[in-house]
Image (tube, rainbow, N blue to C red; front, side):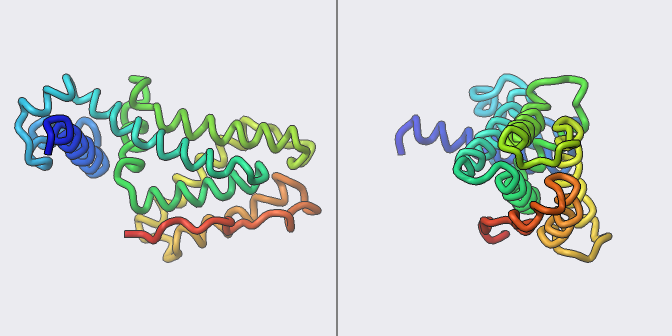
Length: 211
């Protein structure tokens, strides 16, 4: 293994460990020693890659943003409203399986007043939803009285809120099923009753199996 490959592996282990700990304990509840211990790496090795804990947050957020960008690009040929539905299902599956995405949201909640990089993924997710809804409005898919900004807030609350309720065990339902049911309730107001049949509230893509 070359020095560059070893360095890349070390960095990846640090980012993965940081994500898992930020997810479990939050930003304030995680210290550098926790991260190096979890990664099995010395502090010297960590500081070679990251000068501060905030830089690890940035790396975790970048990983989540890159994942979101790929998912959005893969939906480029799908109608805007269906793409938004599919993207919420994809995000819901990530919240169930990917500690980096969960960590990205958690540090945003806890450190929103600090701005970037804590908010990077939340900002990207909001921007993706806004772009899809703006395209939907332009393409005539939304009901006439619908305004994009409040719908974006509703969609963001919907995806994160459903995962929070399901992970607590309060609903007794699978998050994907609950999200589909929420879309069935939401779609008539969003697109108008006459267009509801044009969209699949359960999504049209199948996320990877959960681990």
